[in-house]
Each structure stands twice: as structure tokens, then as C-alpha cells.
Image 1 (cartoon, one colour):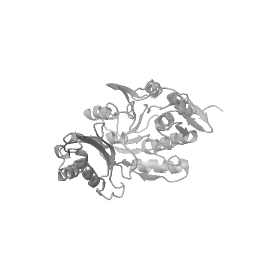
Image 2 (cartoon, rainbow, N blue to C red):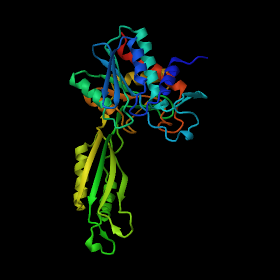
Image 3 (tube, one colour):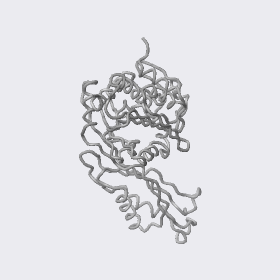
Image 4 (cartoon, rainbow, N blue to C red):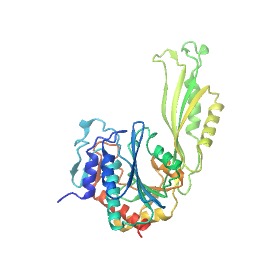
Length: 378
């Protein structure tokens, strides 16, 4: 039996070694398919990152599929059962780096768009694709730069599906209708280096930092709300020492990250944390990296269309969730767009032997197409 079109496209994408920020020709393949459907194509290259903005139509509403062609490194290739860049089908699953995150979704996007346009050549509004090759890496020259470009010319996205692997046990069981914010702090606590036998001549920064971190780790930030779990802080790295047991170190460094709900702002978090450090008398420098604000898409046209389509195609209801890490949705939502994430099961993402169930990406294509029909068909 011949491969379905979704499987053919997924295999084509998986065979390309597009480790961040490389695109390895993935977007050119996508462009060739979209040009035949009447899309206007813009390739936006920022530094080392290749991005694609493709749009069919000139009027609102604008329905956008957003995704990334880059993948994470494979790790030790000898740990894989198959070559990670030779797409391989075993027992109904497609194996390869990026199968679930997120080349399978891109293949489903393309088939959904092709089928919808063939059946609805005079559809309402516009259909767009925003594809980047820098989602898994620094994320500074990818989707965020494309959105900056669109905003500068007042080109707005109304509805957006990000193809991140949102599902937990079966395709469509979870739809992400928001994400928590992410704030990272890097603190350097300054002391005075000295001999451990003469502690009165030294000032141990570890001794100053430790009680402050204990208090920081015990803060109850909020209780979350109807859509978001409670804010959490995790200490991710602590370093100090001069490499000898008889030296009091001169400084200690620590990194921590907060995933926060809409009950807080980044500025409020910083204020509370710096207050704790001041309370403990730390002599310190701190730098902050704010990776994204929390966002939420409440029930409305987009969510209703997606959840109805999932139930029609799969036969079961979906659950809304804001759990998990960050995604490029955090760059799109602040423009006023309704943003959700819907993709395949995420059990193997970033792992050795990453794979996706072929039936799942075929169902995804149907869900995406039905969503288009509900929102843009004449």
C-alpha cells in the first residue's frame, strides 16, 4: 500500500538534517507546495535563521499555522535503533528526529491546507504559515523577528494554531490554550576569598547565599487560577569554590527559573526576589532573562472550532491545558491573536528513538482541515 500524502511529506522533512538553526531545505520544499496554491511567499533571514511567512488572501480574518523546521541534536547516534535522519516506519510508527517535534505537524498542516483550498478556492479571509528554523535554540532570530516585521506593517494574525506536540496519550486529548511565563535569574554573590583556617579574614558567599535560597525555595507565589497552575520556582544551578579544600571562595553563583501564572508579572517577581536577597544582606549582581509572558486564549471561535473538530474526527472530547514549557505562541499571542497549540503525542520528543504514530498525524491533518472549514469556508 502506498504512503499517504501526510506520511510522504513527513518522511521528506525528516530526511533533512535541520538541527537548529539549520533549515536544510525544509522551507524550500514547503514553498514549492504553497506557491502552487496561490500563496505569496516571503523568506525572512535574520542572522543565522531562515524564516518563512506565506499568505493566501489579503483580507481578515487571518488564520495562521505556526511551526518550526529545526530539531534538537540527536545525542549519541549509536543509542538510536535507526538512523535519526533516515525516516523509518516500524509497526505503524514513523521514527526520526523531529517526527513528533514538529515535522509531523508541518506535514499535517500542508495536507490540511491543500485539501481545504482545493475544496474551497474562494475561502473567506486569509490562510498563512509562519515557519522558523530557530525554535529549539536561542529563539532570538525566529518567530519573534517575523512577528516584529508583521507588527511594523500592521499585519495581524487573528487565529493561530501552533503545531507543538500537545497531546499526552492520544492525539487531540490535550489542547494547549495558553502557557505560563518564564523568568530566569542569574545571581553572583560576592564575598572575600581567604584561608579556611582564618575565616575572620574571609567572607564566605556560600554561607550568605544558602539561607536566602532556602527562603526563596519556600515562597508560595500564588495559588494559580481557573486556567493556570500555581507559580513555581526551581533552582537549576549552584557553583562556587576555588578547587581546593582550604580556600574560602570569593564568589558564589546561582541560577533559578520561575514558571509563572497570570496572577503575577515579571516585575513583581523580581521585586519580591530582590527583597529577599536584600533582607539577607547579600552583596550581589543579578541578571534576568524573561523568555515570555503568560498568555491565555479563552473559549471562543478558534477553541470551539478545534475542540469540535477533534470530537468529530477522533470521537472523544479534548481537555484544555496551560501546562508545559514555553512555545513560540508567546511571541504571537501579545499581538492580540487567539493562539492554541495542537499536535501529536509528546512522549518521545527530544528523546532517542523519537517517533510519531502515523495514524495520529493523518488524523491531525483532518482536524486541521475541519477547523479551517468551520472558520473560513464560504
